[in-house]
Length: 130
Image (cartoon, rainbow, N blue to C red; front, top):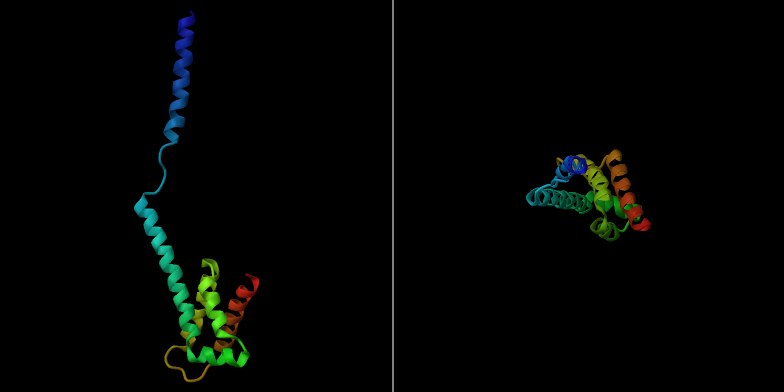
């Protein structure tokens, strides 16, 4: 009588353990998928940084910064050290500025000037808070 109870206990233990062991199977991404996602993230950050730096080099931006008394070297160094989230915000504003300045506009409109100043102030705030 003791033998069937032992066999039943072992059988129940094995049956309850099998789904747990099976559930612990590999659910990880492949190394190539991880590398691809990391490369995409790095290239996105590099593109955002390049967009902001390109706008900071624009003559109209330099003119507005000099009139506002903002040091563009400090802003450029802040862009170099900004994290991904900060870069995303700055790049979004930089693209708006670049779009407003596109087409060889010879005159900077008030809205573009406000966007430029907002971008520069954001960069300087990031520097000041770090």
